[in-house]
Length: 285
Image 1 (tube, rainbow, N blue to C red):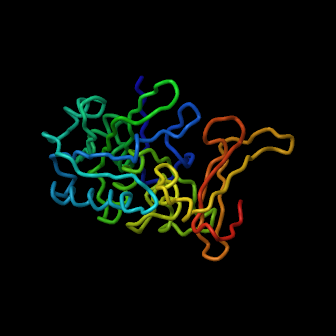
Image 2 (cartoon, rainbow, N blue to C red; image 1 turned 180 degrees about the vertical axis):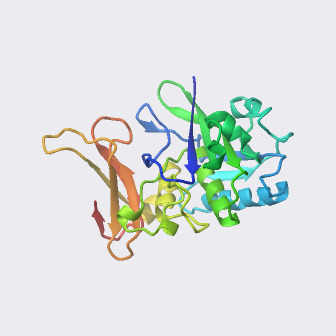
C-alpha cells in the first residue's frame, strides 16, 4: 500500500502546520528504513536564471545541512542525474512514479509545474514542495522514494534558495513544519528552517531543526547529548488536548525547542521532544 504527502514552502503568511514527523502511521513516526540513506537525482534543466551547475551546487550545499548533524544518522547523497529536463509536459512520469528507484530534485525553472499542480498563479507564491511515498505493512510504515520540486520563477537570493532547498529536503526525509516564531521571542531571520514561510536568513539549521532530525533519525549517542521531555497535555478533567504547540526554552541561552501534543495520534495528548544540552534547565510553555 502506497501513501504520499508533500509539504510546501511559501512566501506569504499562512496557517501554521504541526511540528514533528510529517507522517504518522500506526501511531509511529514514518521515516526511511535504517539510518535513512537517500540518494537524490538532480534535474537536467536550469532553475530560473541559474544554470544547472549553479542549481546543483546549491542543492548539494543545502542537503549537507542535514547530513552534517552529528546526532542524526540521515545521509543524503547525490546519485545519477535524471536523464531529462523535467518540465510541465513530462513531470507526471517522475513525480508520481514510486518504483523507478529515483528521488528526483526537479528544477521548475518557470514555475509551470507548480501552476499545473496548485492552480494558475501559484508560482508567484509557492517556492517549492516535497515529500515521500511510503509503504504500510500493517504494523509500521516506511518511506520508499521521495521527490522535491523547486520553483525558479521567483527571484530569490542564494541564501533564500538554499533555505528553500534544505526545507524541502527536510520534508522529503520526513520532517513537518515547525511552529516556533515571534511568539517565542524569535526574530524573523532566526525562525526554524522548517517554518512554513521563507523567513530564515541563515543557511544553517535552527536548534529545533537539529533536534527534530535527531529525534527521527537518532544516533546511538543522542541520549548523551540531548535531554528528553515527555508528558501528556490535558484539560483539568483529563480530556486530551490535541495539536497544541508545546515548547521549552533554555533559561541560559534562550534556545527553544518544540513538540505537538498528541502528535502520534494516540488521543492521549502525549508529547515528546529532545532538548540541547541534556544538563540544562528548561521552562516548558
